[in-house]
Image (cartoon, rainbow, N blue to C red):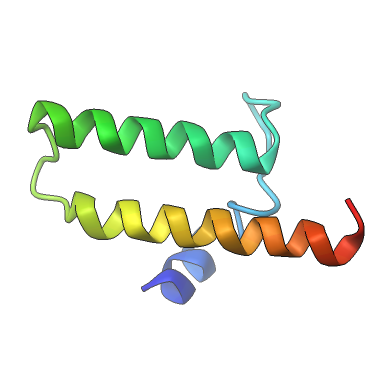
Length: 73
């Protein structure tokens, strides 16, 4: 699922286009996680698999952290 979505969105989790937002990739993931948790808490997930999406975002957060660690950042 993560590989497929990453291909569809063009690696937006690690290299966002930044048209409107100047948030770092890590902050962008935190925002998405907050939004997903908000939808779950309010019961507004509109037929999405919000729990699976949340797990995916948390995995991407770990991957991004490891990518930063390897680059020395």
